[in-house]
Length: 395
Ligand code: ADP
Ligand code: 3PG
Ligand code: MG
Image (cartoon, rainbow, N blue to C red; front, top):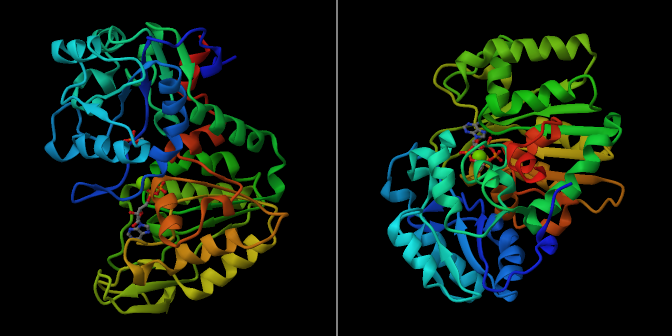
């Protein structure tokens, strides 16, 4: 059993270190999509309302143990101030003498935001020393970083060995919504996988091949599968070293008579920009230095029809380079099909970029059954794996 916020006996005056996942898309020092931040507000507010001294820590990007100026969390702390309408003190370190002093002088109900924990080499290696240093800042540890809970790092897992550890309200909610999916009848489930990296999606494909009603592939990930099928994909983004994996997954799908769909047409562009002209082509016509940047119109129709016949859909990964309007139509077609008013259809969406994409389409989150803040974490959870950040709370 995991203990949650309401199990904490007394919060007034307590120093509570809360691991959040504020690894949000940033551009020119501004937060582009604050979904993950907004989803954590109930935990922060619960703690401050009860008079706790709240110490927030997050990672941003992959600085690999070094300080990278662009990955400092100061703009995120500023954005949080606006969301909470409350001052948030920022420190440009996450452990050490200055941080200890800042914690000592904190008043009840106040918030201190520490620097990107991945600037410290001990974070990802989960070093004993860094776990201890972090834990010494607080009396209680709360994990509300569902999206980072598949990482066995100091601030997501290791620290729980040193302090009484609890799940935050977001982690509690994610587990509550995603757990029933694990036990449900997968025959009626359609899995839509897109995005960029084959690696993070192999596990969930392996788990669902042979079980799901249908599997639909899109995005740069589908390009790797198309290349494995022998299609000429021109100069499209794909992962050469994952072609063999893609081939194996397709053979597995065939052996298990799994309906697994690949795009039948593609959108290419004359440039990669918001002014680009999008051209829809059958796959056979892709050649030379053409780049597949989205699923084509025919594929969009086929995928929307399959969605309409499904009872439950799990979607992770955009269908194309959605950041540019000419290549966003495939992703928008999926989002629209999922948000269509059909009370019978249950829809689960995960992935930082996928959530950003649906927000850009102007579709409200409450049009879906559940929007998870996790990407890799949600996929690993749905594979049935125990996430280290959650397992650490069970001790
Ligand atoms: P999520 O964060 O939702 O899990 P991913 O991180 O796996 O999704 O992938 C999202 C990224 O994939 C986006 O930046 C998107 O532009 C990119 N992408 C999707 N399709 C293509 C494509 N055909 N060519 C290049 N990039 C693509
Ligand atoms: C995510 O964006 O999926 C999480 O913040 C985890 O980030 P990571 O893949 O760099 O560990
Ligand atoms: Mg992403």
